[in-house]
Amino acid sequence: LKPPRSQLPPLATRPPGRGSAAPPFAAMVERLAYRRHSRYNTKSNKTRLLRTPGGRLTSLVVKKKAKGPACGDCGKRIIGVPALRPQEYRRLKKRERRVNRAYGGSRCAKCVRTRVVRAFLIEEQKCVKQVLAEKSGAAKEPAEKKKKGK
Image (cartoon, rainbow, N blue to C red):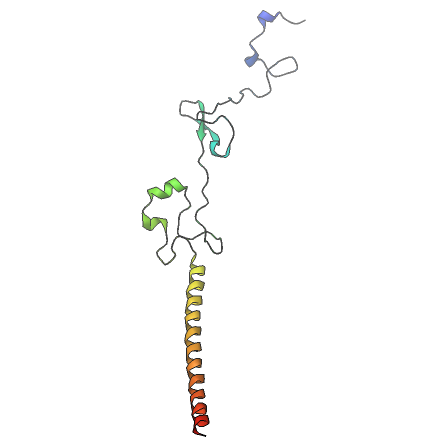
């Protein structure tokens, strides 16, 4: 025989079993509403649960993870420059935003080195061509003088 409903203890204090409506775990997770402009789970509206010192659960808006600047030639990340969101770069000093060398914040060290070497070799090639042209010009002059002498 079951006791009448008025004599049963409340649902939360009843032991879990077949007849009880309470789930085996006692506390359910609170449902939290978005507290900002967007009501949808978009990339810019990610949140995580945070328990306050008072014991309440609130939603904390998570910032997007920054990738950081990449080399324009090879696409690798530039070492020495922090990975921040664009707004945070504006707050940094200029020396913190880039590396102290030519093409500091836009090209990696390896690509800068190859650029410098390539420019040097091109200049050297020009010098070699000029010297060869002078030599061939000097070799042609005596031949031309011999032809005129006849």
